[in-house]
Image (tube, rainbow over all chains, first blue to last red; front, side):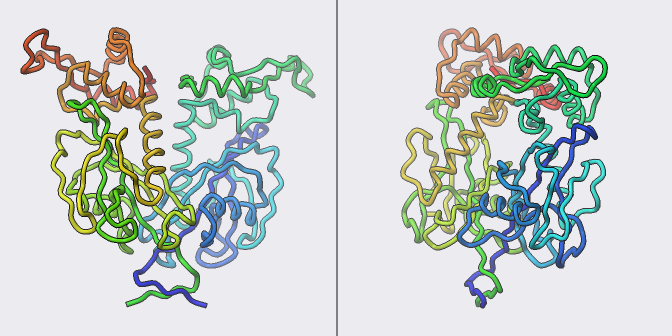
Length: 232
Length: 232
């Protein structure tokens, strides 16, 4: 089979940047796959692939993510389209990148199939060399993530349902790459009124088990729609 | 000439949403072109067209904008990629949309060539029926513009170099679609310290000629990089 057009056309792909926060390792991680075929055979890359002709862009991204990593039921947000003429050795390939924040604990088990030999979570500080311009796509996604901290509390998507305040602080510290003063962070985050203090404490901690919190989704949505500033 | 591929490929276009603020008419306007050819012949649309194989996406957007409207030296920011399978009657066409804010007064004169019969500024409240899914692209661009107001004072790009405070207020009122209390607006906007009060007043006004202001670009950049909240 072959397809003929009057004018040349770039090929179109989607790529997915999926971030998770590993609370135990206190590390922000990104989901990568190892490529089965050329180009960049055996090299690590963002999950992704070619868009089908009957498929919209987001559907293609969800399908590729599922096929190559086993992850499903992920909310993907469009990040940016990358179209440098020389970004792919196969010729002109334009890629629409998508972006997701997930609860790492829920998606620890990965399952690589189709074009992927392997799928793994890598701390963003220790990623292997990436295929194509994927290091740049990852960089743009990290900037978007940091920008988001300015106008929404992103812990909601990245943390487990119940967490001690320290875990939220570690998340902010990891993303912003700076240390936040403990009491000041506590004061500011509680002032936002998007957290619910639960009548539960950490399990398996001998001394000073910390209180657990959860996000108040309703309050959060109300504030977000009023344009509330969530900045720390 | 024809081009043959092993797998089918969507065609790739770029479209540009260019906003200007007409201070005299107190109207936010969008730049549209009238299409010369099918599909949607004679219909109004966003300026745009097919991406060349050697051209990156932004270069294609800049070229199409220049060809169809005469506008050049415009800073375009990527908005979003639109890829619904049925958005174009010619078959699968994916479009990467770009977005710009310009000083309307500087770009009043338009010059339509190539695929455009005409190019005009339309108040966003009085746009004609648009080709393809361009009404939706325009809607997404307006949401982005309103979202931007939350974290940067956008008047900088849309207003002339010197302006009375009332003009900045009218701009905010137009974009936010609500009336802002005069004294309160004045207080809040001056508190941001991004405006310079000039020793100049409005010309051609008999009574109470208002003081003119300009944006302090340096201060503005400093604040923006520190993550300052510009919200009103």
